[in-house]
Image 1 (cartoon, rainbow, N blue to C red):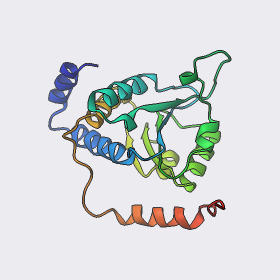
Image 2 (image 1 turned 180 degrees about the vertical axis):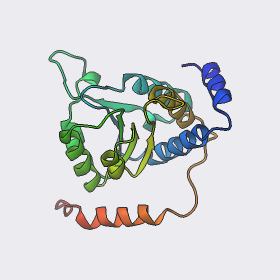
Image 3 (image 1 turned 60 degrees about the vertical axis):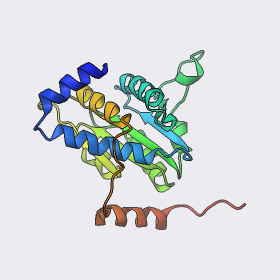
Image 4 (image 1 turned 120 degrees about the vertical axis):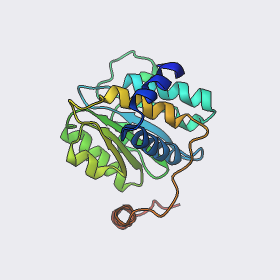
Length: 200
């Protein structure tokens, strides 16, 4: 979706909760993918692969000059002979850790295998973000979540366009202010339950 269409979409949604919600989420995404970090991992469900969001984030990374927005698409099924950028399987989430960001796009409830991997990545220190259809379990694992219930004013595809466009805007401020108590408590729990660091 080009800038003109995004602008028209924003005009239509002006005055709704979707514009501030998508900007807040985009700010969280942008601030979590720091240049020195391990990168952005993007994963969907077994049924839904977020190809479209991956393409938009690649474009936004190029246009904004923020290479850290360039995602690695993690796939549930990798077929032999596919190009390297399409050959990253779920094992990559198992290797995720501190400094990395995992963005889960889940219109429906993710399978147990994915939820376990996301939980393990969070315990290892990865930042977890979720664009979802309202599933409580994936929202509970996410440091930042944006739910798009089916049958609402907008659909998940529309929200993905708004989030990716906002994430690439250089004028987007980083989230400021005190962190919510729940977020601080969650980070503390993650640190206390994380495996011990490897020997050097």
